[in-house]
View 1: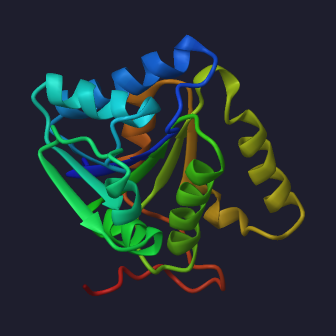
View 2: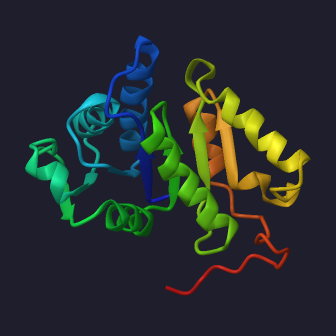
View 3: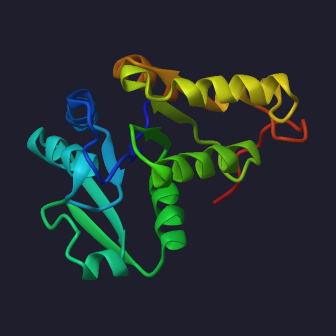
Amino acid sequence: MTPRAVAVFCGSSFGRDPAYAEAARLTGRTLAERGIDVVYGGGHVGLMGLVADAALEAGGRVIGVIPRQLDDRELSHRGVTELLVVESMHERKQLMADLSDAFIALPGGAGTLEEIAEQWTWAQLTIHAKPSGFLDVGGYWAPMRQMLTTMVDEGFVRAEQAGIVSFDDDLDALLDALSAPPSWVDKWGAPRETPTP
């Protein structure tokens, strides 16, 4: 089932490779063209700003969620469809999860990795049943893909749960993977049950 809204986690910087910026624009534009709302961190800076701008230019709906501390520093994107100002990073992540049906990580730093890893963990524990994906621009997430293989090989992630996350360098293929119904079990081997809202 096609997600109605996808949270995009990505850098608040542009990175060194121009391919990162192009991937950010492509992500925003493609989501808008598919009629999928973009949920993101609410900033106008770096890759996150490019995602928002591209989605808006393509006629898409963009929901930004930003902590008050960053809003006070004038880092918010004032042109998004809806800007939600929250009190903490914890509240930001929870609200982004609540608003989204799936999650995509573009290249980014520690914050990007922490955000996507938390949603991966929540799915693993069946707090929600929403998939996560890494858009592997120029091999940026290849070490993370290898890390997942190591986690499975070393017995820290169940093989049946590896499908919670997808990796692809093709955005359309990644979105198709994120549209597939969840099929994993929880961390302790019980059948996955979608929590009631």
